[in-house]
Amino acid sequence: MKGKLFKILALSLAASMLSTTMAGCSPKESSSSTAASTAGAASGTSSALKDDESQEVELTIFSSLANYQGELKGWGAKLLKDKFNVKVNIIAPNVAGGGNTLYQTRSASGFLGDIVMLQQNEIAKTVKAGLFYDMASNGLLDTYGKDIKKYDKAIKKCQKMYETGDKVFLIPQSVSSGDPKKSSDLIGLMNCLFTRYDYYVGIGKPKLSSTDDIVNMLEAMVKKYPKAENGKKTYGVSLYKDWDYFNMNGCTGLGLLYGWSTRNFVEYNNDATQVRSILDKDSYYMKCLRFYYECNKRGLLDPDSPTQNYATVTDKYGKGQILLGFWAYCGLAQYNTKAHTDAGKGFYMIPVEGEKIVSNGFNPYGAGEAAGIGSATKNPVRAMKVLNWLYSPEGVEVINNGPEGLCWTVKDGKNVSTDFAKNLVGETKIPDEYGGGTWSAGHLNNINWWAVNASDTDPNTNEPYNSGLWSSSQAQPQSKLYEDWSKDYGYSNSMELAKARNEIAVIPGNDFVPANESDALKTKENQIATVIKTNCWKMAFAKSDEEFESLYKDMVTKAKGLGLDEVLDFYIKDTQNLAKAIQESVKGQAGN
Image (tube, rainbow, N blue to C red; front, side, top):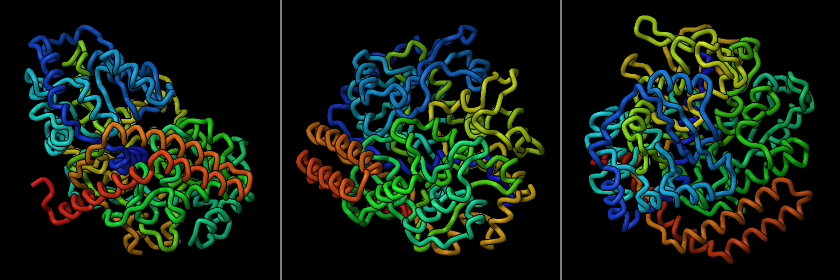
């Protein structure tokens, strides 16, 4: 672990998005081809190729995954203004609240945005409604989308999934050109138990073999280290609702330690040959929920969890107020600056006995979420240029590592991080010449769109996009934190340790296409999801074991009354198709 891994944020978020490939069901719509044809005809005019970049235009980006809403400002805004002469306004349902209301309202108006980025479960109806522009028309993709065109397997998967024929409406996120059978984590795991290693050492490095052990560890940490550097109280864990779509998303973390991923109402093992309801008593989802409940009983669960958002939680991680996370984009990405790790402080992996950590393989087909150009855009070329840039080597470098010059430079054909980048936190002030403001407020990826897997290779440097994997980073001396960890475990990084312990469960990249749901089943899913989310949050903060069990029984009874068994039957059968796709990928036959 010669590299600092101080820019692991980009890689971790890409991986977290990739891990949600199955998070929503994207059914094929039998009538989507007709609607697609209508959309292509409506937007496919010769004027689409006309673009005068001397004229500033405002582009609206509708992103179902964004955690920021409003005009993009700071360094990200300046970069897009200088490069494309655009001003960007972000529409984010996660921030606006009201569930699907914002999506429905804007869909009804005929204009979601100039660039539209959607969760998997929203795409089919958007295609059917004719709200995507055919990027293949008028040479738009050929002329201005050459970087996107490189990911033809991902494009073809979307064409097959949504039955759009030769029309190109979509490009998935987290696309990759790497080997589908190989882990995309490379040297740093994205899913594992991340905690303050300095605190872990401080309490005697207890052995962890169960969630009870983890709770005891956190209790000991909070007792010994009750306040963060800013004087605020420390908590073991902290949650938020931003990504609660069909379930309480925070409850999906524990399963990733044991080889199980979650897809809406079910969880499945790494080759999808085993599948069960998340509401089963023995599911990892329910074990994780009970873990949060036990944390709350001991004062270890942040009481702000039900009302705060993702931005607030990451800020707390960065200030040392939260001590554990199941994903690298939590504590490790937010707290592990060069200054902290050089001082021996920070987050890193703590192994748990019996774990089998989920690690996603490179996926040439991309994740389930996908982006396109809005059919009602008045600026299709400018929108195409910006969207394509997000998939270009330059765009991927910037999204992952920040502006060139400020955060990284090129030396002898290789990227080198600046001292400024090594100590970045969300509140770091950005020089006015780069747009001013703070690092997080101006981050170009406030749209929360990780177009290309950060472990992919930049053809200009022949090294991964993620700065923690650059040769220049690997050549740097170890910080005290990583040196301490390496001495204790005898390995350079978390991936080496997990491999040596045979604790990695790779999910190969595959071309799985979810089956079609009926509208009636979708209605049942939404109703069941509301029950699950409501009761799970109440259970995490239950006042007693009796209340916890009562809420659980109420949740299961209500969910079954709304048609849970029918929904589970659909997902269990469809997961068998996922298993087949994974098997084909392992054989090397996927996409052939």
